[in-house]
Each structure stands twice: as C-alpha cells, then as structure tokens.
Length: 304
Image (cartoon, rainbow, N blue to C red):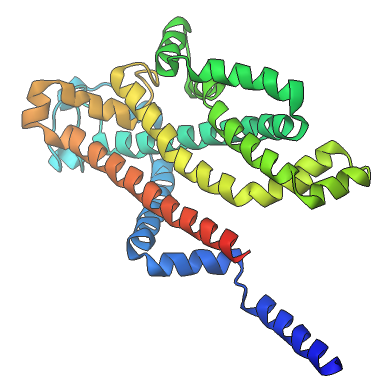
C-alpha cells in the first residue's frame, strides 16, 4: 500500500515537473512560428530605433517651414529622405510621427484597459441590477457611430493636443474590454475558490483584483497587444482624414495624407511611401506576434 502511495506521489511530482511555465509555453510557440519570431524582432527593432532616434530631433526645428528647401529629393543638401512641400525634413517627421503614433496607441490601450477591467470586474462580480444598468450603458455606447463622434469632438474643441486626443478616444473604446472582462469574471465567479473566499469574508475588492484578475490576466494581455494595433490604426486614419492630431504635430497619418495630391502621389513617392510601408510593417508585426501570444495563452490554459 505504501509503495502505491509512493508511486502516486512520484507521478504527481513528475506531472508538476513536466508542466511548462507560461514563459516556456510562449518561447515554444515562437520557436514553432518563425514568422511570429521575425515579426517580434522587427517590432522590437522599430520601436527601439524610433524612440532612440527621435531624441536627436527637435519638433520645432523639424516642423519649421522653409520654402527654399521645398521638395528636395532624398540625399539632396544633406536631407536623407528629402523634404516636403514646406521644406520640412521627412526623416525627422517619420521618426517623431512614428513615436507619436505608438505613444497614442499605447496610451489609449492602457487607459481603456484600466477602465474596462475595473468596470468589467465590478459588473461581473456583483451581477444583478449593477450588471443590468451598466451593460445597458455599454450597449448604448457600442451602437453609437464612435468615429463620427470623435470627429465631432475634435472639431468642437478649440485647441487640442495629444493628451486631449487620447482622452477623446479613450472615452469610447473602453466598452469592448469591459464586456470581455465581464464575461470572464462571470465564469470565474462560479468557481469554488470564489465561493470559498466569500464564505471566509474576504473583501470584494480583494476577490476581484487578487483572485479573479490574475486568472484572466493572460487573456487580457493578449487582447491589449492586439488592441494596440487597432488604436494606432484609428489615430493614423483620423489624422489622415484631417481629424486626428493638430497640423503642427508630426504623425504617420499626416505624411500619408500628402499622397492625396496627385502630383506627389505620382512623382514624389519618397514623401508618402516610407510612412505607408512603416504602417504596414508595424500592423503586421503586432498582429503576427499577438496571434502567437494568443496561441500560447490557449495552450497554457489547456495544460492547466
């Protein structure tokens, strides 16, 4: 009998040893997916290059109009990527614009996730009338034409900057993460460890943030990474249309917007093409890396 118990104990220890950690599951998934590994490397290089390189550019100098240097081609008079119609260096605009787009996308993602997680945990934990009231508000916000409302707010605000723009976007885009967290919190709320915590008199905030949140954190991290690409795309698209960042603030959307001029589109590709390709590479890299992380999260859940 004792021998049987020892065998069961050894088997249990063996299972614990072979159960991989979350980090090892992620590494294994990236090793299997070469495209995701390449995308992660490209994304890391772009972010480091942009944030380090932008330190060497002054926004006021980059955006200073100098008509004498208008439409210089790459390499002329020391301008590596040339200049636009106002004589402003395209290299500086590309570096600072990419940094601004990444910062705005990351800021909106962080703010919307913080608000969405808090609201989702509250309605998922308490349920009942709290769930009904807040979910009706979320449903109302989701049926609104959000992009049109953002354009209206940007138009009405007399003078706005990056902070104002981030706040306007964040007001509307927290509802998706709140709905996701609510559904996961409702599922976790039925588990035994939550019932035991309630029986022991554990405070509600401790159960929500110390019990439920850690168990759904992997899903939220993956969702946030994929949201980053979407939020960056929204900022770039709105700026391209003229309803994003102010004209004096560099953005990838501003550079791509110059392609609306048929002459620039046809004869001066060096003005808009680098920004367009950078947006494409950024979006693809974030999505491919995010999909690999999602698969790693699913694999970790299956392994327990």
